[in-house]
Amino acid sequence: MSSSSTVAETVYNEIRDDVLYGELQPGSKLKLEVLRERYSVGVNTLREVLNRLVASGFVFVEGQKGFRVVETSSSNFMELTSMRLLLERDGLSASIRHGDVEWEARVAGAHHKLAATEKKMIAENSRELTARWSQYDREFHQALISACGSDLHLRLHREIFDQFRRYVVIELKTHGFRGQEIIDEHRELCELALARDVDNAIARLTDHIETYRHRSQD
Image (cartoon, rainbow, N blue to C red):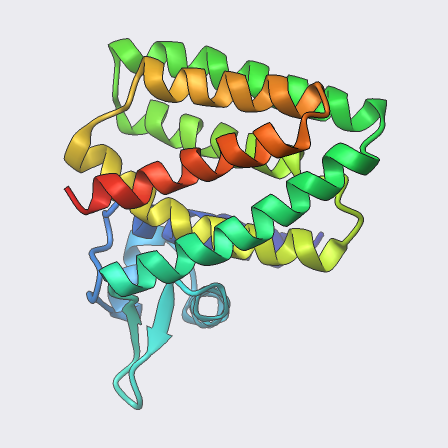
Protein backbone atom coordinates (compact mmCIF):
# COMPACT_ATOMS: atom_id res chain seq x y z
CA MET A 1 0.00 0.00 0.00
CA SER A 2 1.40 3.40 -0.99
CA SER A 3 1.91 6.19 1.54
CA SER A 4 -0.95 8.20 0.00
CA SER A 5 -3.28 5.20 0.31
CA THR A 6 -2.22 4.74 3.92
CA VAL A 7 -2.96 8.40 4.69
CA ALA A 8 -6.36 8.17 3.00
CA GLU A 9 -7.24 5.03 4.97
CA THR A 10 -6.21 6.67 8.24
CA VAL A 11 -8.25 9.80 7.55
CA TYR A 12 -11.23 7.71 6.43
CA ASN A 13 -11.19 5.82 9.73
CA GLU A 14 -10.79 9.05 11.74
CA ILE A 15 -13.71 10.83 10.05
CA ARG A 16 -15.90 7.73 10.16
CA ASP A 17 -15.21 7.33 13.88
CA ASP A 18 -15.94 11.00 14.51
CA VAL A 19 -19.30 10.52 12.78
CA LEU A 20 -19.94 7.32 14.75
CA TYR A 21 -19.17 8.92 18.10
CA GLY A 22 -20.93 12.22 17.44
CA GLU A 23 -17.88 14.48 17.12
CA LEU A 24 -19.26 15.36 13.70
CA GLN A 25 -22.97 15.90 14.30
CA PRO A 26 -25.75 14.53 12.05
CA GLY A 27 -26.56 17.03 9.32
CA SER A 28 -23.44 19.13 9.89
CA LYS A 29 -21.68 20.61 6.87
CA LEU A 30 -18.24 19.19 6.16
CA LYS A 31 -16.16 22.15 5.02
CA LEU A 32 -12.99 21.10 3.24
CA GLU A 33 -10.79 23.82 4.74
CA VAL A 34 -11.93 23.01 8.27
CA LEU A 35 -11.40 19.28 7.72
CA ARG A 36 -8.01 19.90 6.12
CA GLU A 37 -6.78 21.59 9.29
CA ARG A 38 -8.50 19.16 11.65
CA TYR A 39 -7.10 16.01 10.03
CA SER A 40 -3.87 17.47 8.60
CA VAL A 41 -4.48 16.22 5.08
CA GLY A 42 -4.68 17.67 1.58
CA VAL A 43 -7.92 18.64 -0.15
CA ASN A 44 -7.58 15.99 -2.88
CA THR A 45 -7.23 13.23 -0.30
CA LEU A 46 -10.18 14.68 1.61
CA ARG A 47 -12.39 14.58 -1.48
CA GLU A 48 -11.40 10.96 -2.06
CA VAL A 49 -12.19 10.08 1.57
CA LEU A 50 -15.51 11.95 1.61
CA ASN A 51 -16.66 10.24 -1.58
CA ARG A 52 -15.82 6.92 0.02
CA LEU A 53 -17.86 7.93 3.08
CA VAL A 54 -20.75 8.77 0.76
CA ALA A 55 -20.57 5.22 -0.63
CA SER A 56 -20.49 3.87 2.96
CA GLY A 57 -23.64 5.78 3.93
CA PHE A 58 -22.12 8.18 6.48
CA VAL A 59 -21.97 11.31 4.30
CA PHE A 60 -24.07 12.69 1.46
CA VAL A 61 -23.51 15.26 -1.25
CA GLU A 62 -25.90 18.20 -1.08
CA GLY A 63 -26.16 19.22 -4.72
CA GLN A 64 -23.55 21.89 -5.39
CA LYS A 65 -23.30 22.81 -1.71
CA GLY A 66 -20.77 20.17 -0.71
CA PHE A 67 -20.75 17.35 1.81
CA ARG A 68 -22.83 16.83 4.94
CA VAL A 69 -23.02 14.14 7.62
CA VAL A 70 -26.05 11.93 7.04
CA GLU A 71 -28.93 12.64 9.43
CA THR A 72 -30.14 10.00 11.85
CA SER A 73 -33.82 9.04 11.94
CA SER A 74 -36.07 6.39 13.43
CA SER A 75 -37.09 5.20 9.95
CA ASN A 76 -33.45 4.76 8.91
CA PHE A 77 -32.72 2.87 12.12
CA MET A 78 -35.69 0.54 11.57
CA GLU A 79 -34.52 -0.13 8.02
CA LEU A 80 -30.96 -0.86 9.16
CA THR A 81 -32.25 -3.14 11.92
CA SER A 82 -34.34 -5.14 9.45
CA MET A 83 -31.41 -5.47 7.04
CA ARG A 84 -29.02 -6.47 9.79
CA LEU A 85 -31.44 -9.16 11.00
CA LEU A 86 -31.87 -10.48 7.47
CA LEU A 87 -28.15 -10.70 6.76
CA GLU A 88 -27.01 -11.88 10.17
CA ARG A 89 -29.63 -14.57 10.74
CA ASP A 90 -29.03 -16.07 7.32
CA GLY A 91 -25.26 -15.82 7.71
CA LEU A 92 -25.29 -17.36 11.19
CA SER A 93 -27.51 -20.24 10.09
CA ALA A 94 -25.18 -21.05 7.17
CA SER A 95 -22.07 -20.71 9.32
CA ILE A 96 -23.36 -23.03 12.03
CA ARG A 97 -24.14 -25.66 9.40
CA HIS A 98 -20.90 -25.35 7.44
CA GLY A 99 -18.32 -23.82 9.79
CA ASP A 100 -15.20 -25.84 10.56
CA VAL A 101 -12.83 -25.78 13.52
CA GLU A 102 -11.25 -22.58 12.21
CA TRP A 103 -14.67 -20.90 12.33
CA GLU A 104 -15.14 -22.13 15.90
CA ALA A 105 -11.75 -20.64 16.84
CA ARG A 106 -12.66 -17.28 15.28
CA VAL A 107 -15.95 -17.15 17.19
CA ALA A 108 -14.40 -18.17 20.50
CA GLY A 109 -11.47 -15.78 20.12
CA ALA A 110 -13.64 -12.82 19.14
CA HIS A 111 -15.98 -13.48 22.04
CA HIS A 112 -13.08 -13.66 24.52
CA LYS A 113 -11.90 -10.16 23.57
CA LEU A 114 -15.44 -8.80 23.64
CA ALA A 115 -16.28 -10.31 27.03
CA ALA A 116 -13.07 -8.99 28.62
CA THR A 117 -13.84 -5.48 27.36
CA GLU A 118 -17.46 -5.66 28.49
CA LYS A 119 -16.39 -6.43 32.05
CA LYS A 120 -14.34 -3.22 32.00
CA MET A 121 -17.28 -1.31 30.53
CA ILE A 122 -19.32 -1.95 33.66
CA ALA A 123 -16.88 0.15 35.70
CA GLU A 124 -15.85 2.65 33.02
CA ASN A 125 -17.55 4.16 29.98
CA SER A 126 -14.92 6.32 28.29
CA ARG A 127 -14.90 7.00 24.56
CA GLU A 128 -11.69 4.97 24.22
CA LEU A 129 -13.26 1.94 25.89
CA THR A 130 -16.53 2.40 24.02
CA ALA A 131 -14.61 2.49 20.73
CA ARG A 132 -12.76 -0.71 21.66
CA TRP A 133 -16.02 -2.39 22.65
CA SER A 134 -17.63 -1.28 19.38
CA GLN A 135 -14.73 -2.77 17.41
CA TYR A 136 -14.82 -6.08 19.29
CA ASP A 137 -18.62 -6.27 19.06
CA ARG A 138 -18.28 -5.87 15.28
CA GLU A 139 -15.55 -8.53 15.13
CA PHE A 140 -17.65 -10.98 17.16
CA HIS A 141 -20.74 -10.64 14.99
CA GLN A 142 -18.62 -10.88 11.85
CA ALA A 143 -16.95 -14.02 13.19
CA LEU A 144 -20.35 -15.59 13.78
CA ILE A 145 -21.26 -15.34 10.09
CA SER A 146 -17.75 -15.74 8.67
CA ALA A 147 -18.38 -19.28 7.39
CA CYS A 148 -21.50 -18.35 5.41
CA GLY A 149 -19.64 -18.97 2.15
CA SER A 150 -20.36 -15.64 0.43
CA ASP A 151 -17.95 -12.73 0.19
CA LEU A 152 -20.81 -10.51 -1.03
CA HIS A 153 -22.88 -11.41 2.04
CA LEU A 154 -19.99 -10.52 4.34
CA ARG A 155 -19.32 -7.22 2.56
CA LEU A 156 -22.96 -6.15 2.71
CA HIS A 157 -23.10 -7.10 6.38
CA ARG A 158 -20.02 -4.97 7.16
CA GLU A 159 -21.61 -1.95 5.48
CA ILE A 160 -24.94 -2.33 7.27
CA PHE A 161 -23.29 -3.11 10.60
CA ASP A 162 -21.13 0.02 10.45
CA GLN A 163 -24.16 2.22 9.83
CA PHE A 164 -26.07 0.40 12.59
CA ARG A 165 -23.17 1.07 15.00
CA ARG A 166 -23.91 4.78 14.81
CA TYR A 167 -27.25 4.17 16.48
CA VAL A 168 -25.69 1.82 19.03
CA VAL A 169 -23.39 4.66 20.14
CA ILE A 170 -26.40 6.99 20.44
CA GLU A 171 -28.17 4.34 22.49
CA LEU A 172 -25.13 3.98 24.75
CA LYS A 173 -25.02 7.74 25.35
CA THR A 174 -28.76 7.87 26.05
CA HIS A 175 -29.29 4.75 28.14
CA GLY A 176 -25.80 3.71 29.18
CA PHE A 177 -24.09 0.35 28.82
CA ARG A 178 -26.43 -2.59 29.45
CA GLY A 179 -23.88 -4.32 31.66
CA GLN A 180 -24.46 -7.92 32.66
CA GLU A 181 -27.51 -8.18 30.41
CA ILE A 182 -25.54 -7.75 27.18
CA ILE A 183 -22.62 -9.79 28.54
CA ASP A 184 -25.02 -12.70 29.04
CA GLU A 185 -26.56 -12.22 25.60
CA HIS A 186 -23.19 -12.43 23.87
CA ARG A 187 -22.07 -15.40 25.98
CA GLU A 188 -25.27 -17.33 25.25
CA LEU A 189 -25.04 -16.50 21.55
CA CYS A 190 -21.46 -17.76 21.44
CA GLU A 191 -22.32 -20.97 23.30
CA LEU A 192 -25.35 -21.73 21.13
CA ALA A 193 -23.41 -21.13 17.92
CA LEU A 194 -20.56 -23.39 18.98
CA ALA A 195 -23.06 -26.04 20.10
CA ARG A 196 -24.50 -25.92 16.54
CA ASP A 197 -27.96 -25.15 17.94
CA VAL A 198 -29.32 -23.27 14.91
CA ASP A 199 -32.86 -22.54 16.11
CA ASN A 200 -31.94 -21.24 19.56
CA ALA A 201 -28.92 -19.32 18.24
CA ILE A 202 -31.12 -17.53 15.70
CA ALA A 203 -33.72 -16.78 18.41
CA ARG A 204 -31.02 -15.40 20.74
CA LEU A 205 -29.53 -13.29 17.96
CA THR A 206 -32.94 -11.88 17.03
CA ASP A 207 -33.72 -10.89 20.63
CA HIS A 208 -30.26 -9.36 20.97
CA ILE A 209 -30.61 -7.11 17.93
CA GLU A 210 -34.27 -6.28 18.59
CA THR A 211 -33.32 -4.98 22.05
CA TYR A 212 -31.72 -1.93 20.40
CA ARG A 213 -34.97 -1.23 18.55
CA HIS A 214 -37.01 -1.42 21.74
CA ARG A 215 -34.64 0.77 23.75
CA SER A 216 -34.57 3.40 21.02
CA GLN A 217 -38.33 3.76 21.42
CA ASP A 218 -38.20 4.27 25.20
